[in-house]
Image 1 (cartoon, rainbow, N blue to C red):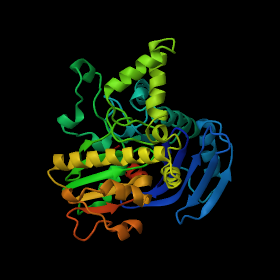
Image 2 (cartoon, helix red, strand yellow):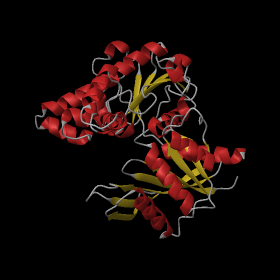
Image 3 (cartoon, rainbow, N blue to C red):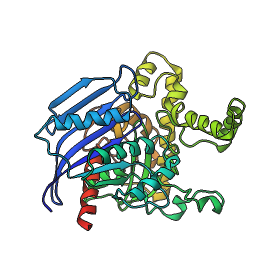
Image 4 (cartoon, rainbow, N blue to C red):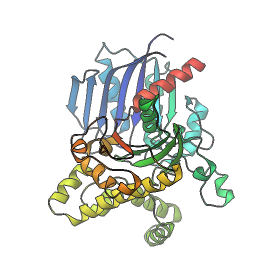
Length: 401
């Protein structure tokens, strides 16, 4: 296969990240990357583009009313740079699939209809991704589009990890653990190859956070469940919570809403957009702002971060037991890569499990290891390469056709 220009799109609730690669089966080279940010947020809109050497090609502050306007900005921006070839294929990150969609594949009208039926499996992510997907098909009608599932890496979870303790009549509807951040985890395994540790835990910590146990390169358990709301505490999401709390909240909300559906929508707003680090701290969902608030004496910010790091430690301990030991722990994602204090707080007290950080290496963000020489477990921090994994999956689908 000759090299093809492949556009990668990663749509979020208020942003669209994008990148264009020149890619063949043997080599994938980044040509440019960028982002449209602050969609729908007054005074926070920004659109930028950088080339492969990180030189800025464009950077503008601009009001962006909605995702359609954001995508239009991307197409116009790419068209203004003739050195960037028009895409021959487009890959879209899709956070969660459905019981009927388990493989990465080319977009068809039937696929779009199925994705529409399962918006509730990833209510923060699938609606904007699907919205952008439809605009992409209209803007590039002759270019094949592909979805690459963020749950694909977890598709072969053992039955005991995949299943949820609910009646079979609900399991039959596709209610089970799908997981997320699979593109990040797959990219970490790819970077560690060919020397992939037998027993590996990867913590993807960012605006959304999760953790996965990996045995011989395969996911055997992951913290997110049917939706990305489960598992670790995230920026605005509860993570795992007593179901009784949700029932209590639903009954409280039912008193002020006209029907069950409206109350459920309000509950979804609470657990997905108003909780987590933001809800507990009352300050921010951003770890940098929380660290500043802690330095200024905020007890609420301190509690939010403590709940976050404690939830990560719980999963690390559980997954070490599940794996029968641990060879390597990897931190990734925005917080995992850049916040040395979070890494230190997560690992504090884990000496008995063989995890011991080196303070100087951790503070310096040593790319090779941040664990102490006498730590039985190697601890590292690596940047995810999700876009590259999307490109490779697109190439594999094209080759199979």
